[in-house]
Structures are given as C-alpha cells and as structure tokens.
Image 1 (cartoon, helix red, strand yellow):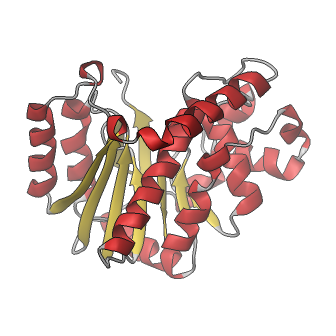
Image 2 (cartoon, rainbow, N blue to C red):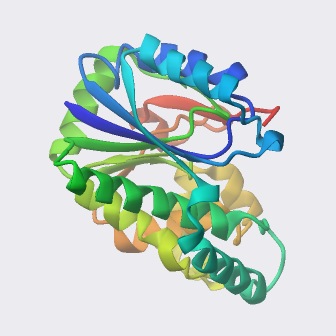
Length: 265
C-alpha cells in the first residue's frame, strides 16, 4: 500500500518515543508499504525545535523506510491564524464548565484539520494518491503491540477495504481518504457538544466500552469526548484499536495497540 502518515505537534519528547514507536510499527502497518510523512509543527525552541533535532527526526524516518514528503511550519501559515483564533474564542466562550477543558483543544483540532487540508492540496498539485491515510502522534505517545504483527496486517487491510475508521482517542486515526477527510472536518469549526450527550444512552454505553475511565469521569469538554461524539454521530463504520490495560472491556478483543501519552510530554 501507499500510505500517507501525518503528524501534528511539537518535537518535544521525540527522543524518548519516536524510534521506539517506529520499531513497534515496522513489522505491521509500515511493513512492505510505501510511507510518505507529512508533518505540521512549529519552530519554537520551547517545543524542542532545532535544525539539528529535525535532522535527527528525518534520519530516523529514513532508517525505517519512511520518506519525509513535506514539513509545514505554523509560522508560515499566517493565512490560517484568524480561523485558529476564532475557534479558540468559540471554545472558550461556549464551554459551560471546565471539566475536561483545555485551552489548546480547539487549536489542536483546527491544526489537524489544516494538516489534512494542506496534504490534500499538495497531493492534488503533485498528482499523488494513497491507499490509506494515517494520523498518528509518534513524538509524544508510547505505542506497543497488543496483538501479533500478522493479526494487525490482516485486519488492517480488511477494515480498510470495508471503509472503517480505525482510531484511538485523539491519538490515532486510520482510514481511506474520504473517511479521513470526513473525520478531520471536525476540526474546521469545532462545534462543541455539552453534557446532554451523556443522556444519549447508546453513546454513553459506547464510551463505557471503549474508554471506561472517561466514562466514569465524564470530562465533557476534553478532546477525546468531543471526538468520540463526532465519530459516533458522523462516521458510519469505526473501530477502536487501543487496548485498555486498566479495564477488561469488550473492545480489547479487536484492538491492535496499547497507546499511552508520554509522561514527559
């Protein structure tokens, strides 16, 4: 397969995570595939950006047969600043409490939307197409296998052929172009949902199955819950692929990976 692998975010903890994640993915989703990398980041020293660090990152991807196709920098994208600010103001002004709220949530999703948009425009301009599009946070997460490489390869192909969105919270999204485009439209406007979502018993029970801790806490305004509700209401077929190591939930049966935030991010 030809795969576009997209990453949004700063390089902060890449030295702790990137190569380990590539090692854990090299014999399943990366194996025998053509991988083009698209990155949206910024040039802030506080985010661990430097020419030296970026060279290390490029070399690591090359080591695992991943081609850096394009790196975008937020500093060069001033045409999009007003929309980014608009979404933040809308989020800050419309949350009804602070449970789950984070000052960067709306910006995070707008910039994911923007990376997908820029990647699509680049592909159209350069006559490139992909069988599969992936958004995976490799710089600040820790990804390990919960199933065999063979299981992941076989089931990834099957789910893609059946037009599924494969996802893990707001950390991993995998699918064909039309599915990924629909998924990341979420970030364009970032229309908030509120506590009444928990009265939707079908949705609430789904969260209980895939992310039991968040079901218990009900942090409505966190990125994950906002994402889950959008997927639940807008994506026809989807599969949670993160194994929960704290609760033995039914979703573990079909999952691929353990995925954790890096504690040093």
